[in-house]
Picture: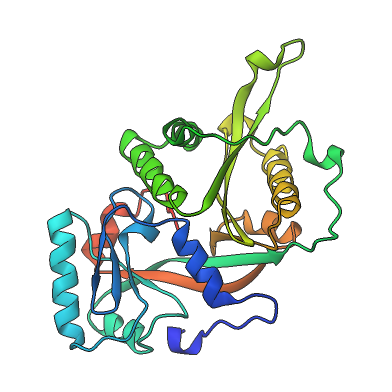
Length: 284
């Protein structure tokens, strides 16, 4: 399906604004504008911050913009990757790239749900022993997430840098779940799951949901997310959103929490720029 035939519609959410706040939450620390194309040049595994989003109409020929974008990526030592959403200005962009051999990969969904002012909080039993805490040290927060996911040093630094960019203009909160072994006090609690909530006005995005391998399958992520939603709603958020790969089994959890798919996006790159990353974990 082309982007031209996948225009997002929703009676519940302003999807253009939803796309904007999701971009705010993962701003690249490096990037340029090329004739209406927002070209992210951040290193790391998160493609959102190292991809082209063609938000605005272009005045120059497509081939000229593409050549300039590829040169920018060569200079940054990164592959040239496009992110195709229902909001690109050129409805033929997806077909143009396909004709040039740019393959489609890593399709993802943006899922959202309303947070009504009178929503009752989740019962304590559903939340389990979850603590919601704000982490001011972004490097330490990124290190916790990287440890849970098994990321390397470069991915950890890239994550911290993106959070720092977001924190300059929106209210970012970092939530962690921890559990204690029987008989131990709070000083001995260990972090076994995490989720990051990034606030932008009435919107809250949920990112970096991760659980330590030994603790998976016990409902800990669900308890953490319920706590996150309760806290965000109490503090004035009216819409929660997240991004998830279309083939990720976690979609069932998000649907159980009331999220619905509101639009799809995907990436395109030349085969040689996709293959080396095929074995790596996909970060939408």
